[in-house]
Length: 190
Image (tube, rainbow, N blue to C red; front, side, top):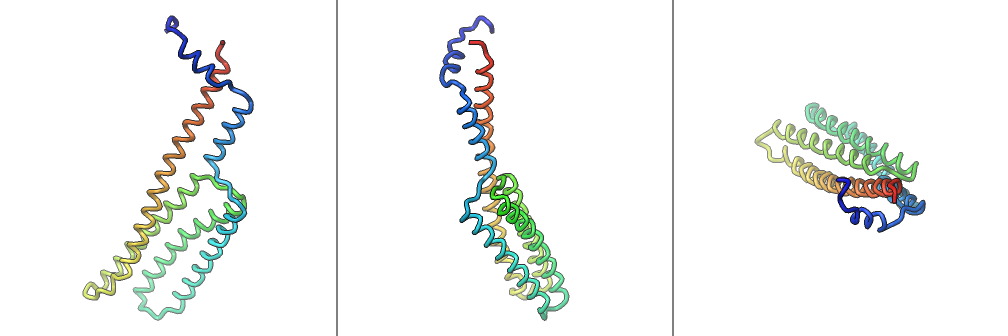
């Protein structure tokens, strides 16, 4: 190995000199890949989404408390409501933290979308279970169709986020590799 020509190595080392500015550029690019900074307008939109979610949760609770449905249907409705509130609570905490800090890590965002997908799946199961209570009545499973649409939307959202996560991981890995190669090139004798 020692006797091999070093022309390729020399060309690589001479291609771009490692400077403190270049190293700082690597760090800034890596930071922008890992963390997303919120602009003031985006923070306002996220805050508005947070308030809207809380308002919808309060309205849902009020509606269930004043419902005149049979007790068996109310148990399923309350279970669905608690599932939705749990998933939305995770999202609300995440949104509040992102708005407060003005930034968020993409990996945490992907976990939030996964929780929404799991919640939509549980609600679909509950909707289908409610439909088995009265199989002769087509209206008993009608809302399962709407929840199925929600499930498909959450599936698409989750799949899109998995693709984006893979892209970000690849970009992050390439940038880390490039930075390490620059560090190694600095240490090698010329």
